[in-house]
Image (cartoon, rainbow, N blue to C red; front, top):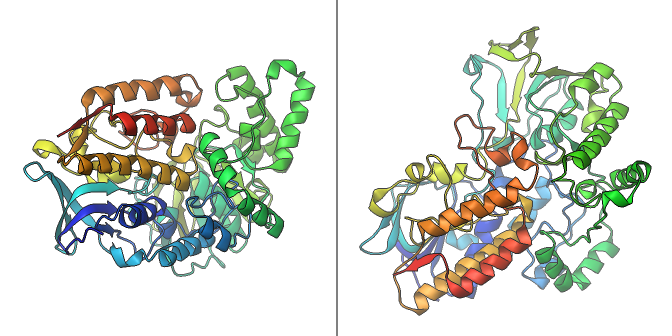
Length: 533
């Protein structure tokens, strides 16, 4: 192993979530490089370290596939218990991984990287930490998280509210009691839909302030059987290949043509997939659901009908009706969300019709009057995908900051490299599949690509590898072309950066994950789009 000292390493990694932990293992144990990782948290987990709100779960039919795939031994020894993994289970799993591969010895926790600058003369990155340290490395790996920077709303008077206040993305590690309290929840994205049913079980009253209604699908979470686990273990190699070529999941998709079915037959298909739960309605109904407006309208209305059937009060059901294309906001798995509105202690304020005017010390004032609350829960999401990199704001050639580079567009190449920022690589950056692919496997495959790039530089005894501006421009066109052939750009969502005031509007993901990783393999062999010096 190449031995680093406390001030210089071959590789510095920022982040100790799924992506950062695997990168540390790969570069240290597979490539024999000296590596140091940094994370502001007190332990491993990344996003899962912070998101401890009630009901937090993987927003996918996850077990045992929302996990690392590289080690059969790891697969064989870990016991997943549910089909939809809880936050606590994910954290326990990552603690196990860190212990198994002895990763913590090379991670500096409770340490924030406050600055990162490229030294052109030495072809090195120099980072500064909040501990006063200055540390250098040839390569900088940013595993800073796609959903990390909490979006804090700026309502008039919000800082004057005197009650308890929590953001779901920064939830306390100590238990939070809702008993006997009037709780206001702003936001009905993933964390809101997961937490509201749990809060309502204990609180005296819950007032949900809905910004945008959602197409939530039933999770159908259940215990994972021993037989299912053993079968996946026995076939893991084939399942991993299937995941790689099926957008991150091993499920076989059914490619039906809507024109081959009558409306009644299509309805029967929707009903069957609804009962199966999970994301099957989105991926297994009919080809073109995310591209053809008429077909999408049909699925959208089907889900709205399910909401009407579930929510007893017609006026509340009306407020819960999404009016955009199904699937163009992040699909959420529901564990009793709509049923919660049938409780006597839950009420809904639709901010589209009754917007927030201001906060007082003891409540929220909307057009219809004041809503007294003792506790405020902000389920207001994240500055997704680009936010964590901009918070780091590295400085590349000639001192250019990333904020300058990304002022009007998040230009990069392959979602991982940035022109003007040599030897810097992102895991799950803008333009990568990210949340449209299984993120642990996506991190493994991205790290393999980065590894090939680093190996090429070291083998040829070069100083740097850097994306070209032309490659960035072509990549931008490629991402836009794929997205524009779908309905995603038709909706204001965090996929488009629309949840953050002033954020450049662009589609932030790659929708063809399998093709994306094929492309990484091709570029790893050719080094097309890179300048090497």
